[in-house]
Image 1 (tube, rainbow, N blue to C red):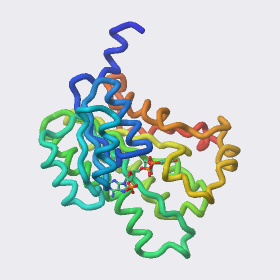
Image 2 (cartoon, rainbow, N blue to C red):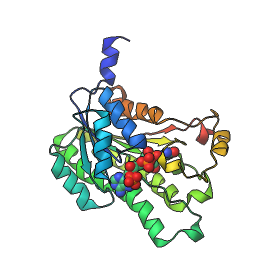
Image 3 (cartoon, protein in one colour):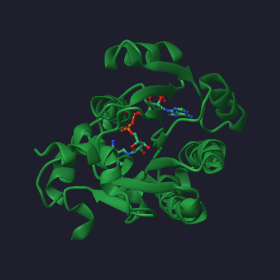
Image 4 (cartoon, rainbow, N blue to C red):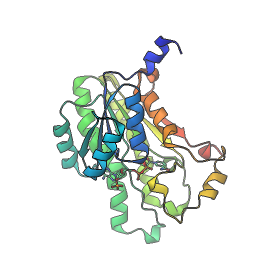
Length: 250
Ligand code: NDP
């Protein structure tokens, strides 16, 4: 590839913070951004697991504990890591799917507080600092569940939280467009990670419902995050990129 084209995708000299980075999609995103030249910081609930994940990505990768659903924990993270990162990837997320009649107040609050409040708190803290600085890039991990109801058992909270992430993406993109910040989202389809590893999960049906006839990989999501975080996507903001093997195109 021509070196000038490579440069558009290059993240050398930039720093990236990935929430929920101890495993799954977040860990792969950190690995990919680092391969593109960025320095990486992982933040997750379990510090020991996060340190282990960071060490696996590289010797200079930072590891911090943060609960994104707690605004003070997010502020503490910002204070602990020092200068605001150039790239923020809001990846931390949870699923606790149940039909509405079985969704308790706690279930509802738990999913909304991590998936939606967490994105708001992280954007408020780091996005505001980016706006003050006049540069920054935010990529949120939404879901195809933010566009369609995949199956009722996934529950109202997960679907509503991810639809909310897609709209937060657009709201922040418009608010900060003139401050040099781009805000985009990736909406993955079914990706094999711990989130989907419960034995009751009917993988064959997911595959059948996916036009491409297979599930996605964490790398296939990380590649899009890298594109959105780089100058190769310099005119893209407020976009929600589907990466679902065609699932939402039926
Ligand atoms: P994983 O469960 O593999 O990883 C998510 C990570 O986020 C875990 O390490 C988890 O920690 C952490 N986390 C959970 N709650 C918090 C919190 N309050 N603060 C900080 N970190 C937290 O999930 P995936 O990699 O599959 O998912 C990543 C993102 O992608 C999520 O937002 C998810 O909704 C989204 N997504 C995933 C899809 C898929 O098919 N896998 C499809 C569409 C979207 P712990 O394990 O300790 O709880």
